[in-house]
Amino acid sequence: MNKSMTAADLVGLGFMTFAFFLGAGNIIFPPMAGFMAGEHLTLAMLGFLVTAVGLPLATIIAVAKAGGGLLTMTRHLPAGMGVAMAVAVYLIIGPAFATPRTGLVAYEMGFKPFLGGSASQTSLALFSLGYFGLATYLSLKPGRLLDAIGKLITPLLVLLLAVLAIAILVAPQGSVPQAAGEYVSHPGIKGLMEGYNTMDTFGALMFGMLIIDVLKEKGISDSKLQTRYLVRAGVIAATGLALVYMALFKLGGTAGGLLASPENGGVIVSTYVQALFGSTGQLILAAIVSLACLTTAVGLISACADFFSNLWPRCSYRNLALVMGALCALVANVGLSTLISLSIPVLVGIYPVAVALVLATLLQGGFAHPRHSLRVIIAVALLFGALDGLKTAGVDLSAFDFLPLFDLGLAWLLPTSLVTILCLALPRRGVVSSAA
Image: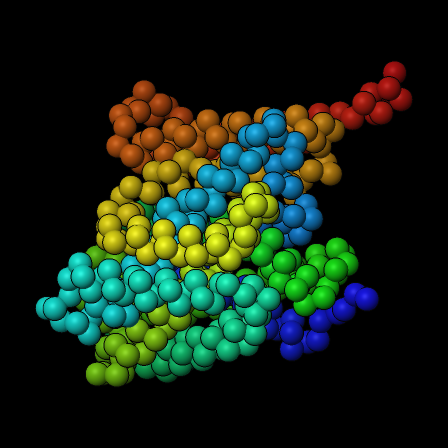
């Protein structure tokens, strides 16, 4: 007998999805963008929302439309290529980068400030063990994710963020800073590009299938109901993310005078919270960051373990979750700066492929030749994305400076868009035959 969800369960599912997306990186990037945008905050924020909220929501809808995750969405690619692409995405967003980063940011912003001068490699190692031990424990029972995260941890996180947002509106601590850099000339485009830093399109490709598994655990077996609830959960999560981003943009946009030239958004948030709440500010910030990081880590470990257990049935979900947690704890010990410097070029190179896959999935019904269209679109995105990735890694590619948007790291955008339009314009065989 197929079950349906109560309104409370649906809200809990939406909160769980929201918590999976809201990592510490999502809290750090908007304040910096708001600070740099200054008087052009509104345009920059709108651009940021397109890529940091719109793209992940579109990805959730694409996963629902495809009826599955990456393997289902890449079924038209040559044999083995879809699997290789899925494995690469899950490793990058899993133990290679995104998941260890949650622990490192939680350590840097939520734990290290209380250690003073006693912080060391040993303290990082011990924190990593405890943090990823807890995240792995919560990941071992995917059927309980809705109750543990959606109905317990996330409401507390939302409450803390709401307190911060209200305080920003009621008692702004600084003035509007002067717009700087590319925010002076084209703030909307710059904001749009900054939204990529959240990397939530990758996350949506992973979380979509995980949410479907949670629905199955709740007894919802009908595929149409699963799709309906997945889309609704995505809308709830996107709404929550948009509200958080707007509040954090406002925080950064009213931080003028508090600090002259912040190194990153974390410094802005720390300074602002300290000004708002005094000595208790750091405790509030530590709670927000730690909860945001932990919920994201749980979602990523669960998604990775679920994917690889389906790919290799001989490996149990439990064992893979334990392995993922151990790998994340190990990788986290390299430190935040080293991890980012090693991984960002890879992310820049493969991100266009993920966007192209989502685009092709959503437009699949409009292609006369879906299989060939998907292959061509993915190939073009991969080729030009690789150029962007190599440039980010420091490789001299000045010979390609003639490419549109190459200087902005978006060389893939126009070629991929053009190829997609051409594929949509190709006539269907039936139309050609009738015309003849």
